[in-house]
Image (cartoon, rainbow, N blue to C red; front, side, top):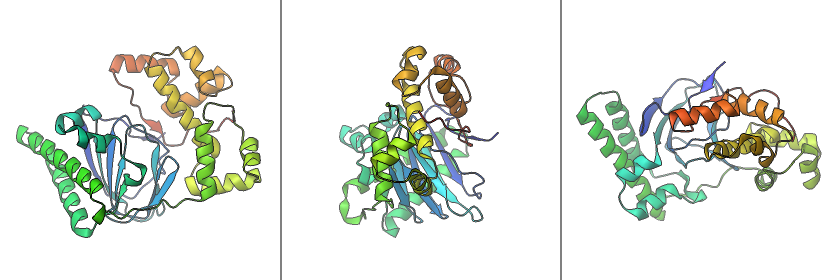
Length: 299
């Protein structure tokens, strides 16, 4: 069984530069920290909630805490190169003192989650990322200080670019309008009992045609999307101390057995084991199964 690394090994931040050909199609997932993704090379779409972007080299994607997202690699035979930076909100607050800048970082508008900059600005970001990767491979106090300085510079530049519209080209997501409406419908009814037949009837579509269209544009089924939305809510409720016996009903599951099976298929531990895990580790970030956990339940 393969798993998506979804846990920070360090307390505050991690930096990666990945160049290998992608071997798997990662599932829709989310983090409890900020992710900055710089696309260097490879045919790739990026999904954030109900939006899908076709990336170009140099594109920068900023994914806020607990936003469902995934990269969809379209050519597994070519190299897929990208930089990935993870930072906790608490650490960012130590780097960025001005509230107005933190507001830009933490509460970005949807049309500012993907930045497509002129070459000179994009190259400046890439140079900072190269410096981050280089210093992250060292293990001395000076490198640690340099890392924090580079991370602060990266965040400030992204704030600056977000506020300066003259060199930001707004990028409209590539998305089928019907699929977008269906995803928004599922978001509105995420805690209700929803069936494929009901969704298809609501949109006056043949359910098999809807299934194919949704899968083509999102790389997942309707029920996979709905299940992961529900489990995200369930996971937060468990972390907040909500009794497990009441959570499954609140999150749209018909019975505890289905909830148990769905939860364990994604987090590879039971809801109760998960509760014990976050209590012991004082956080609630886990890895997700790459296979998506098998059959989906329509409830």
